[in-house]
Amino acid sequence: MTDSEIVELYWKRDEGAIRITQESYHRYLMKIAMQVLGDESDAEECVSDTYLAAWNSMPENRPERLDLYLGKIVRAKAIDRLRYNSGKKRLPQEYIVSIEELDEVFATDPSPEDMLDSEQLKKTINGFLLEQPVQVRKLFLGRYFFFRSLKEVASDCGMSESKAKSILFRTRKKLKAYLKKEGFVV
Image (tube, rainbow, N blue to C red; front, side, top):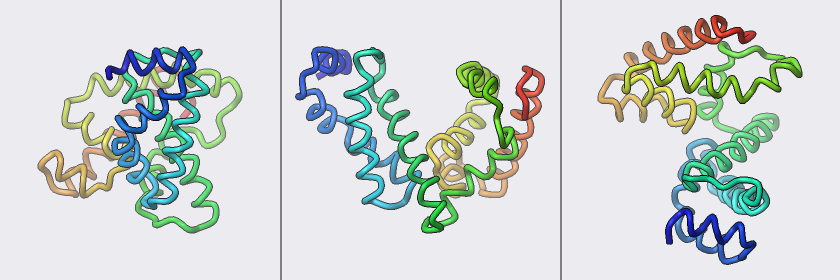
């Protein structure tokens, strides 16, 4: 079944949409959640929450790429769970490191106006990444969107961890300067 057919089932409020989504995307969603959380039971809960969130959000949204839409939802759910777990000091530090690396780029206490600009921020970051070489984009997205370890993203790009770490450091600095130039408070 194609993505558009599955989305149509959601729009028709056919409960079979969730079952088909689960059959088609469960492994993909579990992989994303596991990369963020590192805990199978928490990841499974986030994936289940993703199906419900898709069900509740689909009448307002008609995603062209269901995989990306679901991936975005599960990633947000997993990050929320990560923040909850880290508040309880139960998580391995590896999964918190990538979030902390980006903390230096963004303001710690965004104003309500900054929060309203989140869509513009997303577009600006996407624009910045499109200007970067493919390898830099691959490192950045692997590390900060998919929460993969430094070792994994370096290996994927065929480079040493130290080189990947340097590239990511320079990219974060460039992103910070780019965001300031675009008028964001960082």
